[in-house]
Image (cartoon, rainbow, N blue to C red):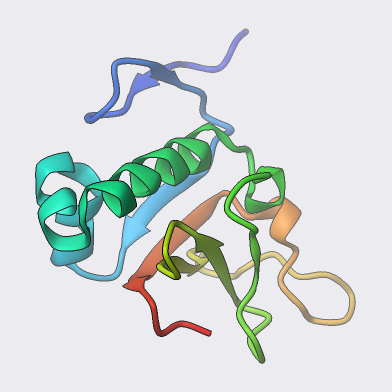
Length: 127
């Protein structure tokens, strides 16, 4: 039996069950990520467009390890937080959002097994 399909409220494409599920630290972050005009007003048009591209990449990925664009990397000194570049020094900061995050033998996050992430911030001061 094939996995059921659901429709993301902001996209006119089907989402597979095995894709990354997004949550947001604040309502403001959710609004920036879900309303293009609001994002453009808050971040500028070019950064807003880059945000939409990175969010589409996240929604299409099976895990953060699948991300190719935006220079995905661990936040300096944090194995539990990742950064994605947008434009002009602006980044998305996110963490795993599982009740118990999957871990590798050394205790670090097993990012290849993370299916739920929480966006913690969008800005220039995350590194």
